[in-house]
Length: 454
Image (cartoon, rainbow, N blue to C red):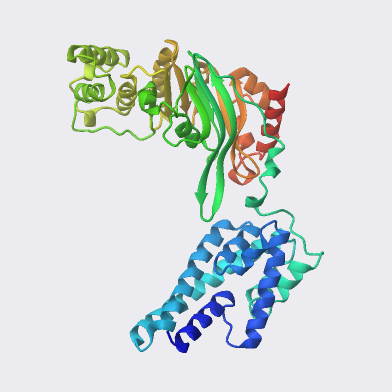
């Protein structure tokens, strides 16, 4: 490798660290830009050394500005620009490749500016500065006045820290308790459910502890993004969390293979083949879910029993594709009921049904609960069937946008706790203001945690 190769590598490193640098002076100014950015990151609670990482530092700056989505796009755009520059430097005599890369850089310039403006606008809001500061930030890589002032002068302070950096901000209202494990019933002790999302660890759920007695039908409430489906997937073992989930005293995660059919899960979408009859669909399900010790007559008997329970006997010979919406829902539930599970979980089973059909469906679920089963249901129209439920779980997004437990208990006590008569009003009270709610999630999460300590 000759001197020319290493000169190209040095040039690429300089470009990555100080975009737009062409000589010693602009590279010195770029170094001041990095130093100022370091100070801004520290003020916002991030690690200052992120300023030394090309491309990624733009995403971190977006976190400081509370503009994460814009930061993701800006990071991708900047990464594409850097890659095309690297290709250009090594293209040599390939004029066509150089032309394509130069064109890509030109195209990337416009979204880069647009998203930088959005990020810098958010940064002005976080630091409580006027929007005229956007222009100094746009030219900061060449004239680093804005990052140096904001990074090192005490008068420039953010009104809050970047979301990712201080988990202890929410620890003060952790309940610090665990639910007692029931020998009969469901116990959930969920410490956290996390996901890796664009370079950072994101908390989806935290600190959810509850137990449900056999024979209880439970409503699961929460606004969009509160983690309802994530919670159900953690309970049924489909997406395990850092948690202990027990059914009748047995650990679900440790004994998943043996217990998977002890939990019936009915998703919102019907996953049924339309070309099979109702009877054939249930027989196939019985073959899969009932123990091998069951004889064919025993399977047939169980299928006949389940069809009778869910009112499917009159349509047993009909094709699934010819069923009404309510009949398809009942068939979906019947398929899960074949194995006689202890716990039934249903995600919006009344979706697409009118009031009468939905009521009929929930009456059937109530009958199942009365047989000693546990039913957990998500529905977006809870008030029309609320009289059929025993308890309600309310999940809410805290200030960190993490799903937390704002209430678990009887329906009437929930009304008194939230000061609301209708379940839909309870959801509205914990929803964020920008989502049309009252923005009181943290208030109720803290209040519920305090109640648990009494």
